[in-house]
Length: 256
Image 1 (cartoon, helix red, strand yellow):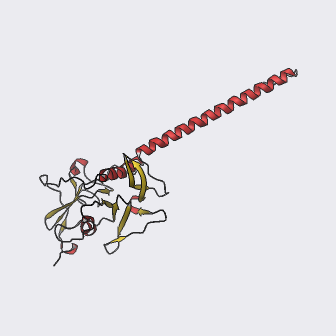
Image 2: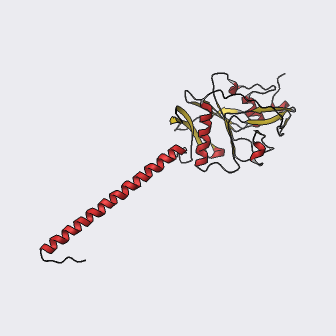
Image 3: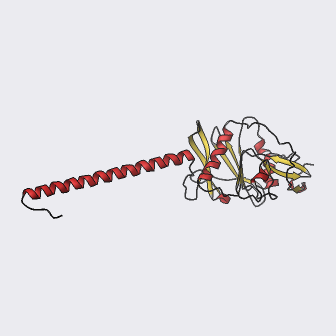
């Protein structure tokens, strides 16, 4: 008989220091760039609290029937940890060291379909682990080449249900008070589809390069405005001087 979450003894224990973690390369060259972009915009928009934790191919741990399970999502977000950063430099154990992640993401590769694995027996599949063991409320799966995003939400029965996008083709992540969606463009010599954040007002959370460009535009606009104002004041001064000269030619001394 296949095991399920109810038959597991789930405990939350610190991973031993001598536990050997997988040290495999990422499945896709795009994964580090996609993950870094998600974190950068949160930080620059002051949406990354001091105790928050973002993760990239970093192990989230649980102990099932006294056996350690470690899954490493391509990106994840924990609102608050209760320990020092040093204590979670190798891996993270929810409940023991802080909150359950509010969202995990997987970026599809060409090698396997483990992101959808509901295998309940040890070691459990990713989908089963995120849904039934960790009970992460939001699970996002991105196909980077085609820009196809699926967002699943944990329902009241404890199962993931596919969410529908809004009119802007974005998904509301309530725990972060942000929208998640697809954006197409270039960054770091990569042109394609990216995952981006939008705030509750629909404003895009910018990357550092975009903020710098925006600041340059605003500075240039301010300089142009100042130059236009200088030219206007100079023209007014010239007109005033011409009028004064005309009055003097008529024998009228202009008022100062």
